[in-house]
Each structure stands twice: as C-alpha cells, then as structure tokens.
Amino acid sequence: MARVLLAIASAALIVSTSAAAAVLVVRSSGPSATAYPPGKALPDTHMLKLKASDTVVLLDSRGTRTLHGPGSFSVLASATPAAGAANTAGTSARRIRLGAVRGIGTRSVWQADLGRSGNVCVANASELTLYRADASNAADVTLVDSTGKKADVYFEAGQSDAAWPTALPVTSGARINVTGLAEPATLTLRILSPAPSGLEGMAQSLIRADCQAQLDVLINTFSARSEG
Image (cartoon, rainbow, N blue to C red; front, side):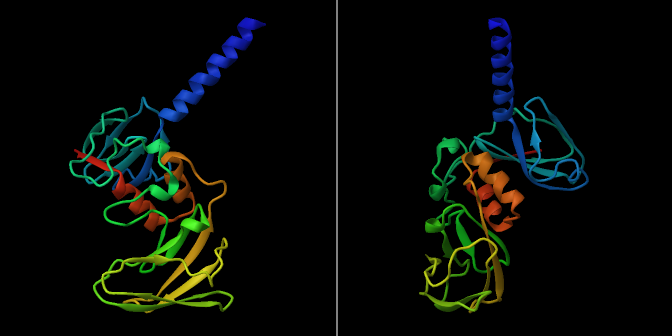
C-alpha cells in the first residue's frame, strides 16, 4: 500500500512539475499561427518548427521570447533579458505582486487604455486606473457607463494616468463610453475571479478574457530577446 501511495505521489509531482514548466504562447502570426494560437501551453520538450514569415512570442517565468521563422526552436532555450529593460525577464516574475507589474515609465498592466476600444481586465478594483497614450496636451475626458452614470476626468499636459472615477462602479460587463480624446472608445470591464497568480497565470487570464491592450503591455514589460 505504501508503494502505491508513493507511486501516486511521485506521479502527481511529475505532472505538477511538468505543468509549471510549460511555456505559454502569447502572440503569433504567419502560416503557423493556427498551430500556435495565443493561450496554448507547450511542454518543455516541444520543438517549434516555424516557416518563413512566422512570428511566435513565448512566455514563461523568465519573461518572453520572440521567435522568427524559418527554423526549429527549442522551448527550453535560454531567454536572456534585454539590456536596459525597465523590468527584465530575470526578475522573479512568479512572485511579482499584481499591482506592481509595470512597463516603461508609469505604465501598468492594470490600467484602462482610454484610446483603445475593447475589454479591460480587472484583478483588483482598487488598482484599476486610467491611461492615455498621448499626454502632450491637457484634456477633459468624459466617461459614461451603460446605466447613464457619468464622470469627468481632467488630464493636465504631461499627465498620462489618473485614478478610476469613484462615480463609476467597477462591475463585470460594464460598458464605458469614452470621449474627449482624439477618437472615442468603448471599454468593457471584465472582473477576473479568482485573481490570477504568476506571470503565466496573468497572461492566460488576459488571453481568455480577450484583454488585448493589457496583454500587449505585459508582453512588452517582460520582453527578452528575439531569435531567428
């Protein structure tokens, strides 16, 4: 009986270790994109065989790697952090607090990009903030949700982020219409429950909820080298 329990425990450990070692596809394009869709987990023994014009971005606890075809690439190849990166892939990404995942400057994954229509993932309502890409001029931005509740947010020249307005409840499925910038936009809030943990878990959650703008920030934050 003891041997059976030991065997079961060993098998569980192997499965757990294998799952933790899996590498996640977070972006792909080209002829092989259908074979490597975003969100696909690859075992650590996998070899990617890419064709000309293929580009695949992989993510694991060390950061991201961008592969360009044609060629064959090992999932386990070392990902060396890019020199001068604001947050390198070598950081202990699995331990990073959700609210601390930031890219260049003050950009955070948990910001609603007011210039890009689409879904906005929320892991913690208290950490949700607003972001605008062009901060060259002052701007009066108006946000209106589907119930008619309205909030005005003023951005000074040079200011790219602001607090989420307390007048607008952060609820899953809420649609927020944004005006006052170069182009109007519509944001749809998606509450992540349970909140994701680890770099891979965050990426998988963003992919499943189709929060593309935030996924782009995450990829750029932990970008490492480009191969091929």
